[in-house]
Image 1 (cartoon, rainbow, N blue to C red):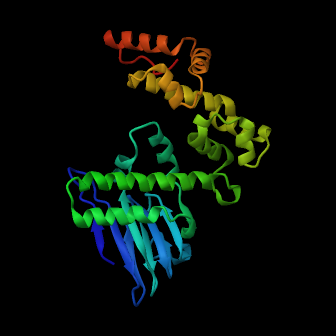
Image 2: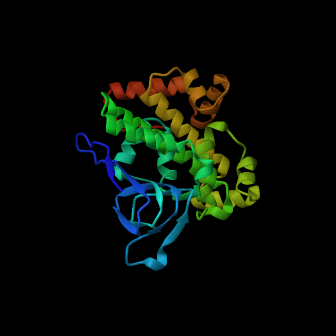
Length: 293
């Protein structure tokens, strides 16, 4: 298995691709604690364990399989004879830098701290992305470093979508009900689903969801959704020059007038007034003004 490293550049850690090429005997590879790991297993099987001394905690995976493990613990990947696939190691710092510079970054970061294992046959779209990373590194064309970062961003976006879809399955999710609601809300809050729709996806009654979310966050599910949209709205009003109508559309409001009413009801002032007051405070040197009322 030959590693292909993405050039670090500046002080950033390198991303590495390692190819499993049908070894004749069992071969083991270490995964650093500070690196997330993606495995695309095309043939044979592998075993993933937290260390070489904890065989009882090992998990075995058969091809075809996609496996994602977040950074946090050192692990060992043992490829059995005849296995074939690709391993991508992503240092935590590299992963964070590859996330989009938008409101989506926080949502993706939360979900990418979860693990995933799915049949690869349903996820072929990710295969050419890793092939693109390998090709860019080998060719070293002008702009390859930037292309590699974009490829990695697309890989993470693809994984985020898979993880989000996985959340709605209660049987396969180890998280508590409130945590699953929070993660699901992070994915779909701009679609303005009803609380009943979230409860239906999570396979619980609305009353049970309400109790769990209120106990965990101090807010009702609807209150939590409104707070998150308000935080995003205030961030966009404060940090961008986008017109209020464009901010409304970005947050999933089909009618900017409805967004104005929503914002005013939640904060006591219109979006335009909020931006005007914030601008005045900044001009006066007051940098401690709260981001939202």
